[in-house]
Length: 205
Image (cartoon, rainbow, N blue to C red; front, side, top):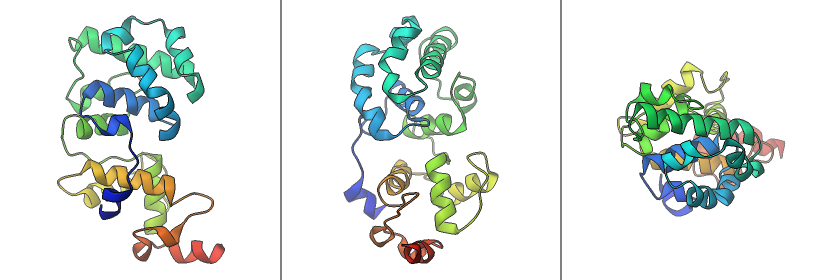
């Protein structure tokens, strides 16, 4: 957390608690880097400023805006379908209920939890690919992926009752900047002394 206060990257979706902005960002961030999303995000928000704009948009046009992210056809279809469902079933308001979020096209457990946490201030643990990688390294354990119950349990314990958003941003940015998969920069990591993998990784270099 101390490292985060000085080193967090700045992204538009981290400066707001607007549910639409956060849902949009989290759906785009899946299987894509934050840097790549940041390049197209202002254009997307400017062009589709509301759920209604997104729901009424042509799916091919949406895909065109997303082509640099890859999987643009799937992303575009899920964004349009999610926006349409929210307009029809939730009066155009992003649902503040975890189960309702999970029922949206393209929204899984991580995205639903992120919207609850970041937009509505409801403390919930979150596990995505970055967090699984982080937990594997720090604890030296084998995790089966984002649905691993142990990963979710660990984050519920680490985050505690507050599950602060800065904790998750810190983990994501440590993975992006320091805990790299091929050449980790363990010497610069704020939790090197707590990491089960650090000594081995530094010897490998």
